Image (cartoon, rainbow, N blue to C red; front, side):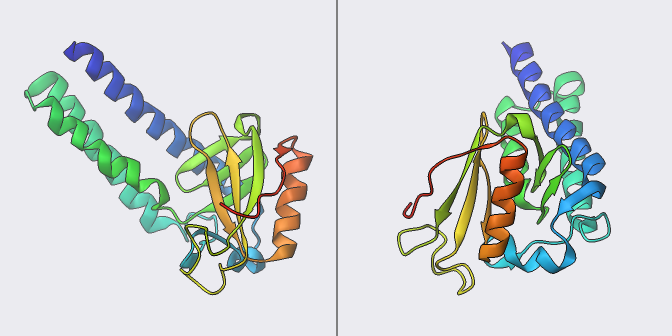
Length: 192
């Protein structure tokens, strides 16, 4: 049973490392956003995204790399050297799951979407929709710029990719790009 748990944990860490390496490879070829468009896209309602470059994302990448390295070291020590409790090893994944938005990044690249610490290829995006941020939406009230704007929700196999769009011209541009790459659009939803 412990071997199966170790295999599962190493598989999860491999997935996170693979996603991070793909993100680093794909980051330099961004189509969107340009420096002017940065203020109209957000991952978190209170803060605009940073430009998708190594210099702008440096500290987030360093912290994310160190976190991955710590998890790998503890898993290796637990599997081969010391007998840590399995519960302790599972606790290490809590920060790893929460580091998804450490990189304040959203970019459309040739092969797909970069969002946080994830790279999602076009073929993995099943559909998208723009959800109006109204009084009943979870992001309403965080910022005046976000109120009455849109949250772009892209459905994937497991976890959706989301961002907040604060200008109508950026909404139309994202809609056009996603449609060009063959992503199906769901009917617009006005409440959440």
